[in-house]
Image 1 (cartoon, rainbow, N blue to C red):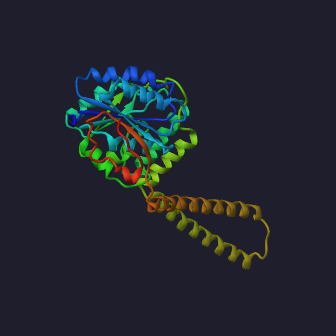
Image 2 (cartoon, rainbow, N blue to C red):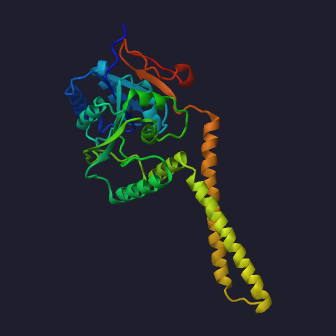
Image 3 (tube, one colour):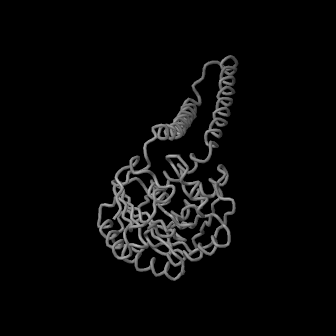
Length: 333
C-alpha cells in the first residue's frame, strides 16, 4: 500500500563526502524531526569514489522511512544531481541543500515557514560568509554583471540552500535544457518569490568541489544560458571597430598623398592590429560558447544515468521521475 506523500523533501547531492556525512546525518534528521511534519531526505550520489555510497546505504537501513538514495553510475555534476533529486522528490515542498554543512540544516525550518506563508520560491542570502575573499569578490562582481545583462534577479546566486513549492519543482522537471542553473530557472518560474537571510559556516571537512576555473565556468554558463546580450554587445563592438578602422584607413591614405611614405608609428600600428586580432579571437570564442550549447542540446543525451534507487517498500515514484528504460537500471529495496 502506498505511503502518504511527505510534506517536505530535502534534496542533497553527494560527491566524495565521507568525512562530512556522519555529522550531516546527526544534524539533519533531528532538525527535520523537530519541525513536526512528514519528510524525506533524497540523497543523490554523484559518482563518489570514496565511502560515501556505503555511508548512504547504512543511513538508508537506519531510517528507510525517511530516506531515499539515488545512485549515479558516474559523475555528472552537481546540477544534474540536484535535477535528479527534484525528479524523485515527492514532497509538497522541496528544499535543496549541500552536503558540506556550510548551510546549517537547522535553517530549513525558516524556509518551510516561508513556503507555508504562500511563497513558491524561497531564495537565501548567506550572512557573514566564511568563504575566501576572492570567492566573495568574484561572487559580488558576477552578481552585478548578471543583473545588468540577464532577467535573473538573485541576491546570492552561490547558495544552494533554497526552497521550492511543488508548482516550481514541476516546472523545473519539465525543463529540457542540458545546461541548467536551477536557482535562476526557479526564480523565473516562480510567481511569488522571496529571499531570506540564513547562517553560513565554514566547510566541516574535506575540500570544495568548485575550483576557481569551475566557478568561472559556472558563471559563464549562467550568463550565456539566460541572455544573448554578450553576442549583441560584441556585434556593437564589431561595428565600432570597423568604423574606427575605416577612419584610420582614410587618414593614412590622405597622409600618403600629403606627406608621402612614412614609417613612423609602425609599432603602434602593430599594437593596434594585435589588439583587434585578440578582440576577434575573443569574439570567436564567445560565439563558440553559444554554438557549443546548441550542440550539447541537439544531441539530446540524458543529463545523468542512474544505477540504482534505494527506497522503502510502498514509496510511490515521484510524478516527474524519469522512466527507468530511458536512463538506466532502477531498483527498489
